Image (cartoon, rainbow, N blue to C red; front, side, top):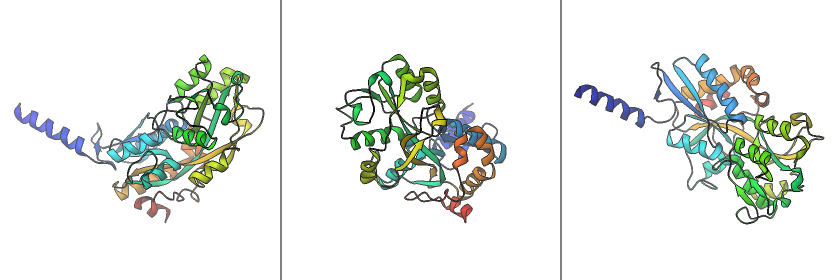
Length: 316
């Protein structure tokens, strides 16, 4: 009995001490990989599930699980701590991480497997709130996304770009997308900020349910200040009317997404994961249309986040 107890404790300690990059033992004796995604009604979670399926089917000796999280900032923290092996993140948050700025007090040891698709910033308001610009959010009840999310980072920077103090000038609530959508439906919120791929199912639910009771707010007026303060990672774009059935295209701000891992991940595993995305991209496209934006030409463009040496080997 004592031998069994000591053995069990040793195994448990080994599992707890295992670092990033595929050191977790799966139930079948293989390697268990954790994928940090985002809110359950967001695109990260959907694509993360698709990636997990690809790993299960096509990466021998590995099993994967997509974990719902608060998204970008939390995801990077999880990868650095060894709680997750792979993470989806917005490029602006990842840039902060490698520089040790913003939400990060020191440079974080992350590396990119590649650039993915673009995240589109959604600002949606109840029509009866009379909000037609970001500046008009003053005094309103606004969800700026989950705490430690990329949405929150963008929302706070966008409010500041509009001349608002996020801590004083709006009644800010840090809510997940499902909670946010329900808040607009219930009338406990006036507006939301969301950064996600197109279409995001939670936003589709909101627009389908409320129709012309909600309106999309254009963001072209705050983009110059965003770029001046934080650089060209913030790009001009539109949410096409076909995405949610809006009367017209909506000017917005687009930020790339990255797939990142710990710098200490095994190079062969990083190379295999990168290859997996492109060998089976058609399967990811079936999971969500945003995967169509992933291209070999753009994928290595992850500056200032360095590519992992395994990913660099794949791209040649």
